[in-house]
Image (cartoon, rainbow, N blue to C red):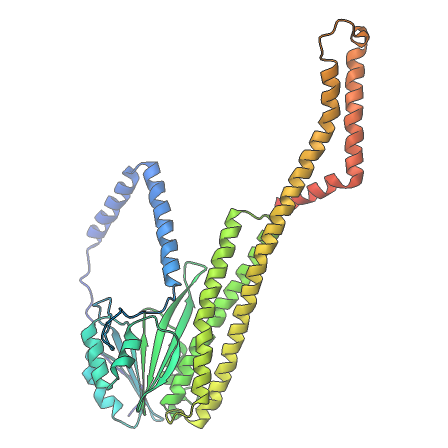
Length: 420
């Protein structure tokens, strides 16, 4: 086997469109959008935002798959007909080969050699191809069912000469503060590793592929079990960028809760707690699965690789501790929010009390001298109007001075300044 050489078929490029056609389509789209009423365009934007929020919530759902009552064991529930993307990387200490395949039967010559073969399936559509994959690797029907019927709880199961490891991979969304979670299944054999990814988009395995293709590190000199450790460690390390973004969001949210709490702040706290709960449900079973993988004496995992898996287990515990800490902080933010809202209401009531206390004596004086009695000597005095104003201003000023010395105005001005 020589240096890494790609093997792939000729890609089918879509037929290019003329610029005039593109320009006509764009002009018609702009004209149709401009012809819509303003209220209609606003309603469309609102529906678009609601749809994106629903998609974000759906991407965070990890309610595990449940079989239909009475269904036969090993039944596959495939939701799409799109064929998965199959990528093969076959390597040893002397070189590697990378190939893009469409027929699973073409994998057989590679998995029968002494080199290590990594077969990566991106997507779980097209039941016929998935059944062919099961026949090529001689997968047990229950194993194939756990791989295809997603989502499954992260776990480890050992069959005759294969080992099944189910994990969950998370990554940050590009245009959102949330994250996306998907299932990744590992099937370990003697000299091969089959990975099945739920979503055929992005993953966190690019650094591993680069190390294999560039012959960096000791990955080419190790077996398929070391490749399993490397990929699983990459999944665990993918949690740290997500948690880092949540740490920054918690700091911003904490300042908002203290300075300017609102109904939107309450919604952010609830969304934060729900997302952190999803993270916890993703990482907690993986810790148990990794512990079982280290503890059980499987012949497919060497003693040297178990040492690396213990280090990966430490990273998993660290991620779990961070998730639990952030969940406690998010829960305490609810108490801080209620306290901030209560303090804000108390300051408002204090201000209204000050205003009422100032105007109560003034209203009394105005009410007394506003009565229509004929025998009121003060009303006939030449300076009665100015004396009444002076008394009222003096009372108001004395009350304001009293409240200022009590510190009521100072507390309120501080609250206003923080809010601004």
